[in-house]
Length: 163
Image 1 (cartoon, one colour):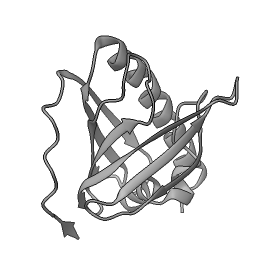
Image 2 (tube, one colour):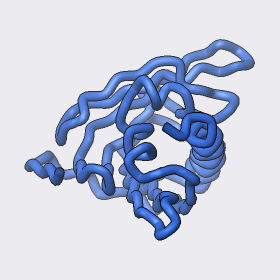
Image 3 (cartoon, one colour):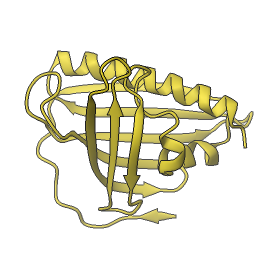
Image 4 (tube, one colour):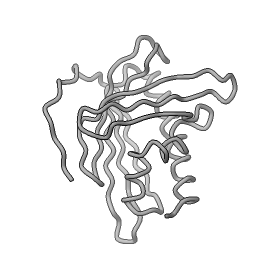
């Protein structure tokens, strides 16, 4: 189902961009649900040292998503959220991403995440992931670590929950 709506334009995105590609041994429909259902997302979202402990989402263009990550070391919470900009089930999910408070290198900035899911001939799912508009090399490095750890957790979760 393709959904589109007029949303306010994002400010000009900053130049730092993270591109990742992963292939999961899971059908595209399951990977889609893992990204879009909070009860699934809470099991894998966030890096291993800052796993998601709660979250919500209103899966519609313009709808808000929220996630609370908690440090396993200190118990500190970090909130992030944004709004869905494009939803094409089960292949394309685009949403804004913003930390609630200063993180890594200063005040929060609106960034943009795009998740593209492709079915492979052998029933697996290739995911092309982009996070653009990151403020600096430091932010890019931090998000590269965080998203790679998060996607490792997603791969493990999908393997343990094939249905």
